[in-house]
Image 1 (tube, rainbow, N blue to C red):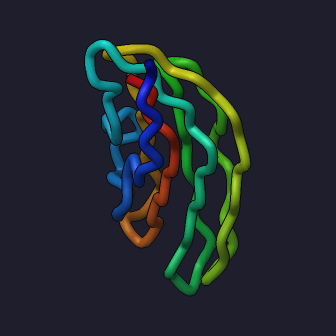
Image 2 (cartoon, rainbow, N blue to C red):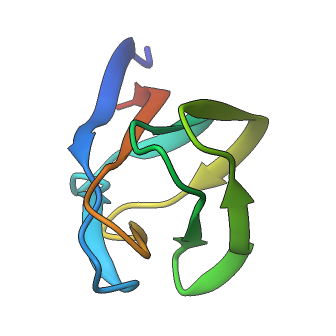
Length: 102
């Protein structure tokens, strides 16, 4: 029987390298990404990019000064596949939630 574990897949500041690996699905596991929150703590706008297993799902999206963008999703990624992303500034924070199914 499968085990479902809700978890924070990534919490923290973005890198300015847009292809930074934020999460890798463990072996023998499928992960369902349920929500991506992006907060900009700066007094000026910033942009971010998110990839699921190498496919862009959010490309250079603008987040307003001191604002948050929420991306609700139900996207599955298989064992060893990744979530990658980055932003124009390290004042952007990612909060990515999901469920691991093993």
